[in-house]
Image 1: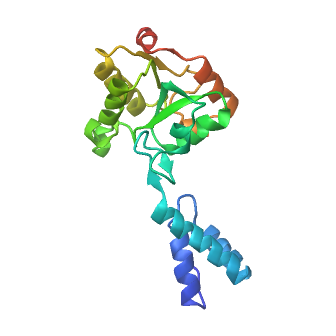
Image 2: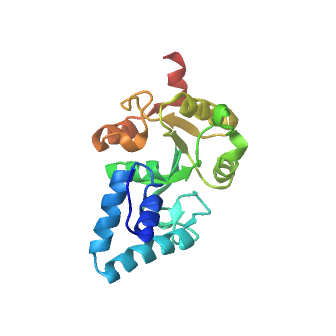
Length: 206
């Protein structure tokens, strides 16, 4: 247990230790590092975090994080607007963008169906996805959820909802190991999984 000579330092350490992946020892190192920096640098960090929290919004089209009402990806005229990649959260958008293999648009569900966690279809951005497909000229939907039980359940639910809509439904190739999260998959493997995607129906026979 740390014996802090400063309550201010102790408070800062306790707040830093609340961050994911940051234990008490790491929090102490970070706090002492910040203490050694000049005031301007620390204020710049603090202001950036406060500005991010207060001003970042969700794109009203795809639900990706954005600085404006419509995100830069949706606003990019060079993207293929007829191709939508469905992902769990913004970390997956970042992971796929890092592959430089996908030039369509995204739709962020905000999670996956998980009855154990009390998350049902109504808690996700599924209805807005269906509305996008009905109102826009969408020719293909790529299901790019992590290959977990919850991800597969969500894929199947959306596929059933799309069954009577004239749109091609595909899924990323299984280069991504079962149980893995997309954000932890290397860029080459993930890029190949996007490029070599399969008709969703083909997964039923596996």
